[in-house]
Image (tube, rainbow, N blue to C red; front, side, top):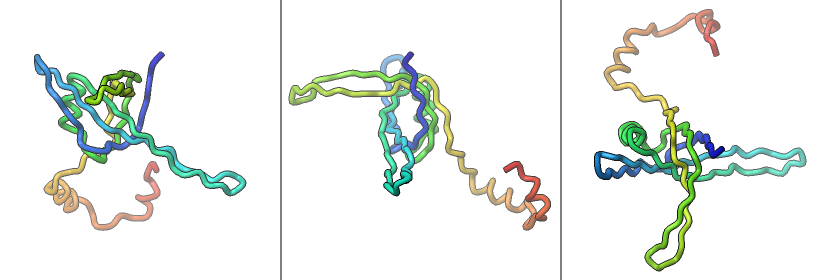
Length: 137
């Protein structure tokens, strides 16, 4: 089975190309980070960030073009693909990519300024402590 699941942040705006018959391909650089920790003996292990090239096809690529931007947090499921090519100097280059099957945007979309202004007028300026205690988190 070839299955990859990644949660990470987009490093730069997606690169989108269109081919014949309105077929879109989008490419995103996705950074995943494993948090550092301290061993029992006091040794500190730093954060480790890996960069992944994620490729989206057809309707997923169009969604990426429309909704994904630098800094967004994504959940991507897909497959690992390997390919190689010869560069301009004739040297063989190897590429590892994630071909995405599904995408979930984890970054909340900001409300427009008018929505925020209307919402702030509609909400009371203070809440009782009892109301705060009923929060589910």
